[in-house]
Image (cartoon, rainbow over all chains, first blue to last red; front, side, top):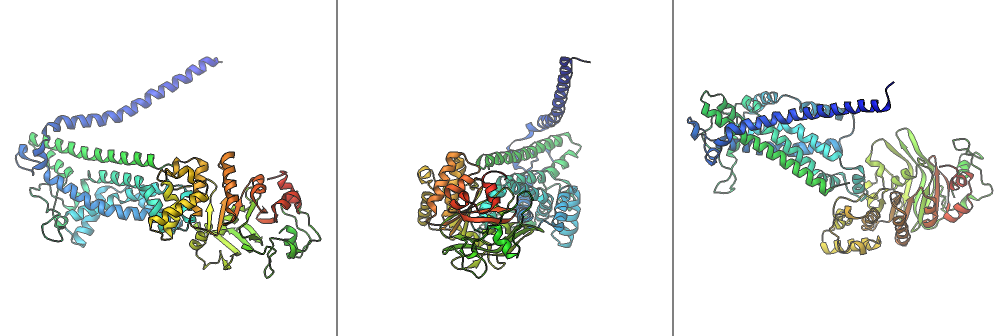
Length: 302
Length: 301
């Protein structure tokens, strides 16, 4: 029989082995991301300047810029957020606070969870059939925004429900015991207290949507746009213009793909630079999400 | 006193044992049921002349499980009534029936009626709005549950629900409620600080202020000191004493000393039935039921 000390030494060795193994696995993820970022920056960073961000694409690589794609991505994100946030939050609140806990609700919940796993290109096919052809919206900013809204809707719904579920029952009971209705409880307590979680979910959803390519290619987004989107503001009343909704467009990942697929090496630098911008946007959005979450956590504790 | 003897007489049986069997209930002979305070059989005038709440054959069930059975008790206006009994006896369930909290969850059923005087409205009648009942019968919970808002906003919420918008009125009412809850001196300089910056005992007094701000007729306390230390408990008890000139108080407590210290009336619930209901000093010095005596002397529960 081994002595107590020997047994302990053996068990401590096992502990150290897992410690090292775990660290290596973590490092693998970090290294891959680091290599990706370094490669992009290496090829693309030098190409980024003010002219690159403010120019339309061109046949001459050095003069080409991403303005059209930037406008397109921004416009599509506005539509996506404007549609997905109210729909997703309302659906999340309904499912969590109003819906009776029965079979039908359970089926709906499972379907929403499944929806989050549907490949994005399927959303593109759905949008092509329904939005582009049946409703005749065409391959426009509006169609793209609606498509991506459908794509991130499950994310927003799930984030809303998680945020609501984190609120203790005692808070709901306190509100009801004072005579608040269900809506007053939602409006004055549950929504304000879950705002951090909801905002985090929305931002993460949008940062996924901004990188989506497949569904937008499917609905017929352009790959080469050398003209601006119609502006949202005009001189005469009502001062707002929605012509941009009906315009054709491209977005950053499509622009990037377009440049990558060209034989001329100079365009590859453009693609890498676009990648840096896109990654910067995504990381920026995630950073905002983390910031919002930690600030809300500090302000609200149960 | 509503004891099992009284129930038994309704069932035309001389005596009745409550399970589990070792705890037999003795019958108290020779008492005139009409002279028994707290008892309010249908049609008969209750012994308490100034009644605030009156249970008539009240019962409550979760699904098929009957948690409360055949309760016939009256609660005196502007007095403190304590509900005692072992865990799971139904005392909190009864308390939460008064303000219809059970309506928030599915699968619950009320039986009989709870009359709220002076208008005699039946609190648990299907047509009666739970919201109205909750606005007339305020509740303080077991664990302090302030909203994650400022001290001021916590107290003002009930007023805002009633449509009070003018800041001057809100401020005056919030101040009055905080004074009534003995919290004003500690909070007057930091009304806009978060409620969670208060200590546990202060948070519970804030919850009491929140309940009082809307001038309720009844305040329901659900073991309000079980999460607090002895000093904070004492302050809450003093506060409850000071409130009874203004409101009717029903308090659920697992602490029999607390019931003796603050309650005018005490009801002992066991397995969903009101074993005994009497003046507190009578209940604790000379209980009519053997079961009550066993419980208050700590032999079970």
